[in-house]
Each structure stands twice: as C-alpha cells, then as structure tokens.
Figure 1 (cartoon, helix red, strand yellow):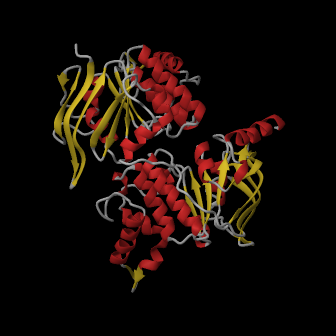
Figure 2: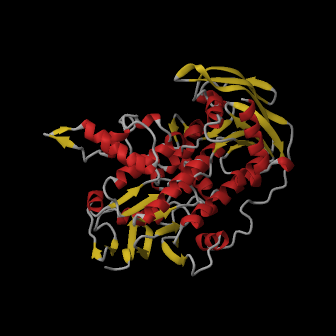
Length: 511
C-alpha cells in the first residue's frame, strides 16, 4: 500500500470564467496532520470539495487517488463510503433535533424496521465520550454552543469509521479553550491512525499540530513544508500565502482623536428566554471621534449582546438605558432607527446577519442606501452598479462583477462587501463584531486599513475581538467586559494581554 492516502493530480476547477484551481497537485501521507494554508479564495475549500464529492466527477479536470485507487465520486455519499469525512466551517447540523439524531442522521439504528432509540442513545454516548462531549444525547443542537456542535460533527465522522478527516476552519468560531480541546482531539486521532487535513488561518495553531503544510495561492500550489525538514515560521507562511512579506501585521496609523461622539449609559438588558436573568448590567461606555475603541472579554461575557441590543434592540428584552450621539439621546429601538442615526453593525455571524445569501454584491451593498438610487420612482441599476464598482475597487473585492452572487465569494471578500454596504451608507459609528474571524492575514490587513481610513475621517469604530494581539495592534482604548459588566478601561499604553486578563480575573473573584 502507498505511503500516501490521498494524491491529487493536475486538478482544474472553473466557475464560469473564473479558474479557481489551476493544475493543483497534492500528496497527503497516511496518518499525518496535513495543513492547507492560503488566503481566502485561494482554492483550499474548493480542492477539498472536489475530494469529498461536493463537486462531482466531470465538473473538474484532472484526477485524484485515495489509497492508490482513482476516485470518481458523484456525491458526498461516495466519499463517505470510502471513510472520508469533511466538516465544513458552516456546520451541517439540524438545530431542532437532538445530538443523537444528528449523529446517526441517514444511518438510523433500527430494530424490526423501527428506530431503536435505546441503542441510538447508547451508541451516541460512546462517541460523545470519545470526543469529550459531556451532554445528554437527547440535548437539542440549538441548546449547545458552537464548540460543542463541532464535536457533534466529529462524532458523526468517527461513527462512520473515518480514515481521512477534513476539517475546514474548525476553530474559526471557537474560543481559546475550545480550540485547544479540538486540536488535542486531532492529535489523539493521529495516534489512532486517522489522517487529518486541516484548513486554518490561525498560524500559531497550524505550527503546533502540523506534520506538513501546503500553501496555496490563487488556485496554485506554492510550496509544501515538512516539519523537521523545512524551516516553518509565521513569516515564511505569510510570505508564501500573500506573495510578499508583511513586515507589520497591523498598518501604521497616527491617531487624531477628538471629542466624545457616542455614548451608551446605564445599559441593562435581560435574557430574551428568561426575563428574570440580566445579561448586561448597567453598562456605560463612551467612544471618541477618530478612535478605534476595543471591547475585550471572554466568550459569553456579553460583548455581542451589547452590540446587538444597541443596534435596533436585535437582542434582549426589558432594555433600559440611553444611547447618545454627539451629546444628544437617540432612539435605536429598531434597526431602521439605528441606520437613520448613522450607526452600522457588522455581525460576528456574517451568514445570518451580514449579507443576503443568494443575492448579488450590488444588491447587498446598496440595500441600506436604496433611496439615493431611486430616480423617477424607480431604482436606477446603472447608478447602483457604478457605486458598487467603486467599493469593489476601493476595498479590493475579488469578484467577476457587481452582479456576482455574494454567496460565491470567499469569506474575506464577503466581509468586505458588508463593510462596503455600511461605508456607502455614510455611517458615523461602526460597531464591528469579530470582523476578521475566519479570514486570512492578507484580507485582515486590508480590513485593518479600512478601519484606519474610517477613523482618519473622524468616524468612530467600536471593535469587538477575541484576538488579543489584534486588540493590542489596533486599539486606542479598550473596555473589558465580564459577566455582563464593564470590569476595566485601559488606555493605549495600558493595553496588554496581562492587563486585560487581570481585569477579567479580578471581576470574577469579586463576582
């Protein structure tokens, strides 16, 4: 048997006039952890979709081999039959169903033609224990967090006796503790002889677990690095990914901070599912014109709840407190009110709250600003296209044209479409919740530049991030939130990981 479990040879994949993969050849050794790195849109996920049968034989050129045998998959069912499992960044779980039901979906355990629920729960429990998921098998998917949902997906894979496990950005939405647990699990699978292909933008994680790294850029293989043979460093990976050296991960900026332009005062919010439970407790913060104001805190601290409750009361109930802009109280009880007062919100979940799936770039970019494109009672599409094309150029959105379906863009380009939407709306206050989550270093740098351009024009950026180095590299000031309260305020010279964690720990002890 070959040392290689998977080989791809000269794979070419086209989407219309766009060539996503250009003669990609890849070799994955049996039992290794093989990492794919590259910018958003480089072709990593496309290649794995070919291997897993998402893109069927005949829809691409070239060939690939699994255990030395050429594969001509017509669907994902064919790859599953070969013990190949792919876990996509956007999980394929059915929220209203239980953990056990999701694990055995389509492969139900039956007795005399009827589902054997006792055996289903027992088998599910066995796999859950294997991955460290300590829940009841009857727990509904909608009632557990993203980290645990990832583990359910892994349970599905190992219940099929997986031999090749493909993980596409598995830690993108996880906190540090959850990420660590998942990576340890991948290392444990390696001991069991399972081969893993890991797609990730988190270079520190990549270097910790990898045996081999293949870097893809613009649909082509740039180089493959092997641990113990090649020099593997963040600098080298980044240079191969973006085609140039990034000497500074954060673009330089000379702050020009003015007066307070936005304030949230005595903000209290209750849980929409439990009207007696406070989620935010008397929060007061202010932001100055020309300032990037960071919001730090652990997962679940209340950062996203703050952003969503302020922007149109999208989260929470029994909301009290005031929002002020330029010293005047404003009504942000509805999204339309918030937009009218020139507030913008970029959600941490771009697929649910960020853009309209299935619609064009143009329709997404112009949506909050439609009245300005109305001419003689009708929408002037030529004006829409011209405005969209301007932002496609300004933000370097890699796309065919303004009419391209936004769902077909890479994550980084989708995020730039969302930013374009709010820049076109001429907002003054931008609330950005994890705007660089799940995107590569090159796209991150471009988004950081957009943030710098915003504040250079006197705009306000409120920047929520779980990435400590990102907060340190970009923010002029940081509020730390824990358990729904502000537990610290740090000026530029005080922003360190130690000080942020110190605020959180002190608040935890006092609580």
